[in-house]
Length: 581
Image (cartoon, rainbow, N blue to C red; front, side, top):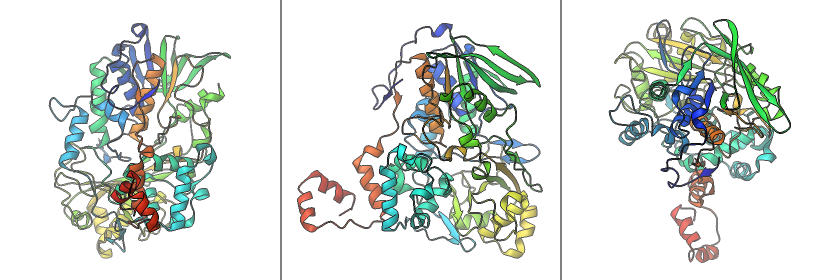
């Protein structure tokens, strides 16, 4: 496997890999990474889909990319996915997957046209004082010291940030800035999370720094990610003969390991309550999604708080990774990510409005008609003075195809779930959906005397506790995450958010698909480059633009004599183009 850039290899079709007609593939998990790997096996590896089996523990595909209408609880989403134009591997995949919405179009075509016609941006990024403008005003408010701290982080080597936290390298001045407010609520970073991953994020998205304050950097699907991304991909795979074996909890992949070779020999599972499995040969390829951010998710309801369940039992994907990791040090250290769930948990809620009483308060804040079918909030709105650090968003409506025209689906989440609320005197983690609705209505600016009645009768809120939702952000060092294909491994690959890839960051649809492409191309020897991570970190234009943005438009103090000298070069032209002098 190798990386490429440009469109030379992007448009090329690889030749059939040697021996692929005799190979079979088993993929553990039916999340995006595994589904993408199956698609790349067929499209680029030219494997017969009938020789591909996906083993999924639950009764549905998609993993963290969910979105269902539960007959008992209502519309449910644990989260949403923020996407951008330089998710090179994601769009490489979905250019080949037919849309279920638009005739003779791919999922990429559908997504591209939608975001061309209805570009995303926010008109109110944050509120304060119960629904009033939070006056972030598009500014980052970074002090000179905070700018210097961020620059130092940007330039440091990965090995110098191993096992360090964000608070180890970024001071209080930075953590009091609008930049940190934007960053932590958008990506769900906490002060105790990985400084290394924070650096990866800054470098990965440096070309979008200017779009952080108003979310103009982002693009979204028409519906929830399950209906817009997972369903068309699953349909395409099934049309190509892929078998998805649901209700199958894989407990181990057993290896034959020598000094020179590591070969997967057996997959163990529990199905219908009975242990079973299958022997595999060197000609069988095995792909495992190790770790899960939504493992042990627990749903409450409007009258019941969800449970916090950090226990890892047999059949858990974390237990699977532990069993694999015990066999060889190169298979990673799962405890670094799942060993402290109090530091990796937060809670989200799926809230559906049931009448016309709440939507006017939403419209007042987002400054758009939420029933227009177009962009509504344009991303999360953060109540910056919320003790839960509550954020909420209304994506294009309907968010579900089956959603009634007079209902809105709102996603609400809190980053600080252990603190009492500002209206509800309880931590978010102990609240029912109705109580979370009360707190949300309070920060919308609903008159306090009306809040109890509206929370009880004008909304249905279903909270979800996720003990491992930011597990991939925990401080780490080299070796904690395995390589996609560890050294000397013959027929096995890791997929997903807990593997090491060059320059990319986690918690994105792109990283899931990137690991899938790297895994398939490596094990099959596909004659096509994996698109490299977009190189904006090496683009002086992106760096200059990020510099002026993070300085809130303040020019650099450069001696006039030096400016005159620079003006005779292209450097001076660039500095003036980006208004730095």
